[in-house]
Image (cartoon, rainbow, N blue to C red; front, side):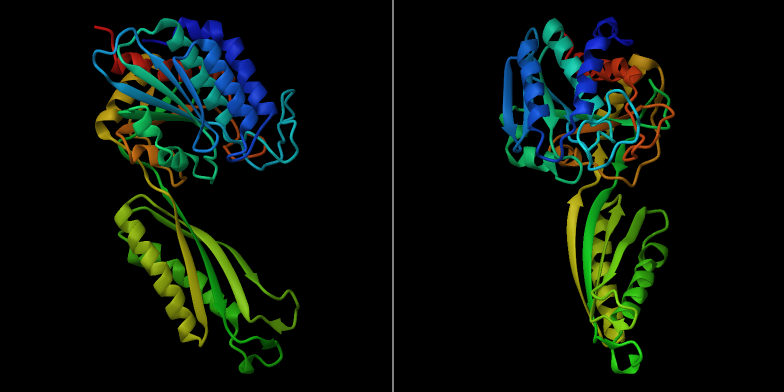
Length: 388
């Protein structure tokens, strides 16, 4: 099952789709143009069903194989949304929308899955049903969660689900995967420290909320260094500190902080949430101030099922012969995790070569990766549901 010749033939067409998506980036759930084009193409391919508006603006296509005696149903997912970044690539097909850019390669993911859908609808060389999932709002909006809440898994009878993401720094055509935790859970917190404001010349009459906030920032670092097993991954980052006053001679009444927590283990995630709250409240109390913490769970851990990870790696190996099956987990987050929480499956990286990292204004998806990605998507269907 090497790279399929059909995808070499389709490469100019798939590349044209990808570059059109790149020129016309849309954010979060506001992907009406992208979703409309995806739905139109799926209809043109002859999919048995095309359903729009799942999880607000998601699109699902259903492709039935030659027979369905095994009854297996496999979901393949790609994300559609872009980022609020001003593009700096200088490409001929650069973003036409000021301040928006496909800086994470979702244009490539969507195009590769469309290519696979066209091939699968043409050949139908499998016994079962392929469900192609085009998701909005991966970049912070939780589109995967919304599609699951909308009943997508049950409605289409999905039994296994697989996803892919391009990865700069890995050679084009090389795949990378691991069983278990692949990407981190991402939580967010907002902290308000309230002291007693006043004149900077009379600090003894105040409770300096800025001083308290500084101690909170330092104390939070003890979670990773002193509270969690060093063999467990955890990152606690305070990314913004803002006082209510910008004057040189005013001690602010309040200071607002916000940040993120990344963990790879649900037990550690629970523990860190409790510690963040306890440290903030106790540190503030020690200085005569108060602290309130708004802690919000974000994307869960992206957890690859070991058996399905093996299937995904086998197909990747057949496509290119180059697969790292023990790639290091990443502390970034991915809302494909909501689908993996519902059904067994796996998430795999596909090399994007020596390019700028994702979320960088100079990033660009490498179109030479398309045949590998489309072959893997299609290969997962044919390998998991072979015709008898």
